[in-house]
Length: 341
Image (cartoon, rainbow, N blue to C red):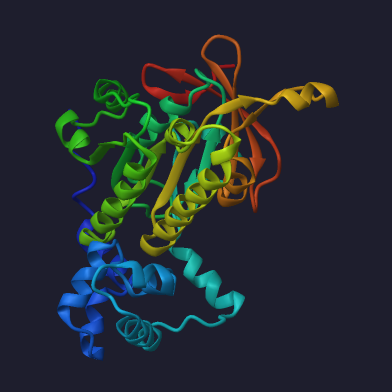
């Protein structure tokens, strides 16, 4: 018998915890900020008290209808509601207990990255075409909805597609592996197709508003792929500085969303040939695009490469808490699975 969908259950008791995870921007009303100004902030994607602290004074003044005096008043009220000074490592450690991990569908790959895709962090997977980046994204759309280790209740997914590679039929195949109801499963994935880098940025504002609207319901934000549209919109060295600046703002936004709403962020990235590498006798003359800005913004970086047949090899390229290591997984009709020996 098909097991019914997981997401709606376990939600009620979850919501209380998640609502206390962030403070709603409406609390500013108690500190003399009027409803019209709060509405203006929400329209700019600022929906929490933490969100105000994460926004610069300059950007806040750029919001239509927010003057410098209003901005200072809002900042002052937010400071009263949420302390943003230092806390002890012990206090931070108890905050980190809210973090969860989402399984990738392969226990070997999970082990490599410390249990799965981590919340409040950006996990980046890069590799050439057909190394399994999009297949991993599709598998995560399903595994996010399943209850997991450490009382993880399951949740919904937001998928931003920049390369037109999202296929609902592929999700149906993967759902069959876990005996999930197709209709309910597809209903839990919110999909958007981005056409320009600016549109991609706007979609992040919509996603943040959605996370605020339904606290604790969404657990994963996927961007496949993060750099494709930047490659198209900015060309040549003349526009490189502008591109990297815009990219830095987008990654900063992603990081803030992940911390503000306690969601996991998974992005895929493309590769480029490195002409200088052949001169220094490097084994692999290809490197991920996005430069140092993307390298520093990603919390965990996974390098994917093709093995024999359906096998793929993932390597930890950069991580704050996991050693450099490799894992082999396979791509099957049911998505990402463990490699058969």
